[in-house]
Every structure is written in structure tokens, then in C-alpha cells.
Amino acid sequence: MDKRNTIEANKIDTAEVPEFVYNSLARSLLSIIQKYYESDKGK
Image (cartoon, rainbow, N blue to C red):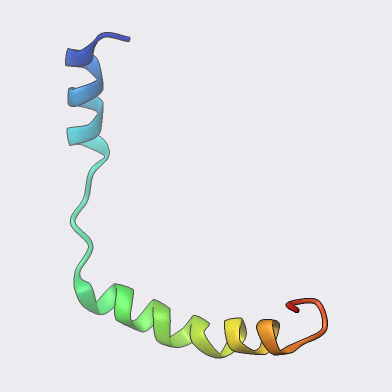
């Protein structure tokens, strides 16, 4: 694939994600990740 096709594909596939989406995802996953690292599997 040449450079031009790569750039065009990236423009099509790229979407701006609002910051609140990252924040809500991080909040929802935080407790799950903490529980994993505190468990025997996570150590």
C-alpha cells in the first residue's frame, strides 16, 4: 500500500472522541482494574 492510500484510509477511519468518553470509561474500569491487581492473579 502506498503512502497516499494509507493517509486516505486514516482520514476515513479517524474519529474525534470527546474527552468525557475517556473519563467515563476510565471511571468505570478503575474499580475492576484495582480489584484485579489486588487479587492473587494480578500479583
